[in-house]
Length: 335
Ligand SMILES: Cc1cc2nc3c(=O)[nH]c(=O)nc-3n(C[C@H](O)[C@H](O)[C@H](O)COP(=O)(O)O)c2cc1C
Image (cartoon, rainbow, N blue to C red; front, side, top):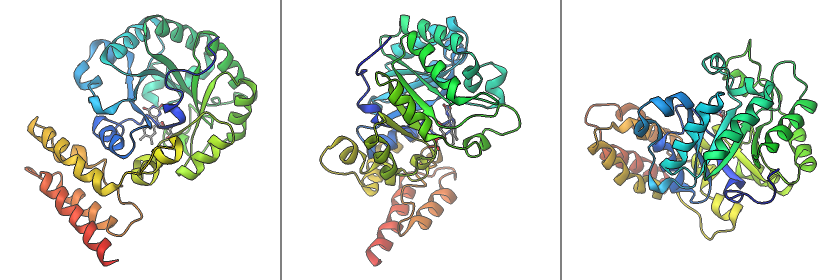
């Protein structure tokens, strides 16, 4: 059984969750400008897509993004082995297996949260991935699915998968209901059981356990870390208000000097945006991830409006972002 610190133990003290359609490379570039340390995750990519799909489009990422983890979806050990090998070759710092996603499409492929019912298969998949991956293989899971009893299912799942060599897990602290709830409802309706995750940490002190689900701020993240959890993964709050969660993260979680600022991140995004446009991309593909940058601050509404109304127009470019930033700065000076 794996024990002791793992290569990304420290980075994983805070992470931004994998989120389909959200945590693409543009989003991760922005998040990395806000925090140098926070561990970032890709959207889930299925193992068959990695093997047969357009790899540069699905797996390509920027040098600036490290530390960055690739999340894989799948349940076929041979496919996952090959996908993990390819992902590590691409330069990802970690390969993560999704055992928490309840969407229909994912269920039909017998992977995601339904794997909570198949710990032996998950262990086999992980063993195959570990055999070929020079980087760490980790698992993101739920506390159970459907009628399962989390108190017994989760420890059995962790023990079984850890025995295959996995030393780090992220636990979304609620069940998933595979029938009857939409993926969105499955992120809100099943109650959170943080206490169970804390008990798992006490029961398995050698495992690196991160808690996920409903964490809304850095304050809350720090509370979990102080209480003994090894890491905290934040999803929606980090996406909708990235500056709130990430600007102070390096100082507060890792003790680095200084904090980043949303305004500076916007300016630092400009060369990235220019490069994206020169390569044939569209402005809104990048700016859609920036809409929440000033959430809760004076000028937030104008910022959002200028970008959401203008960024999809043909020919829209960095000047729109500069105009939107001007709105924020004018209002902040007036405030
Ligand atoms: C839009 C969206 C897409 C998501 N896609 C994935 C995914 O690809 N893989 C995954 O493991 N979880 C996915 N999740 C779940 C998140 O990773 C996270 O577990 C969940 O949102 C709970 O954390 P939060 O309350 O901090 O948002 C997604 C969540 C959202 C909102």
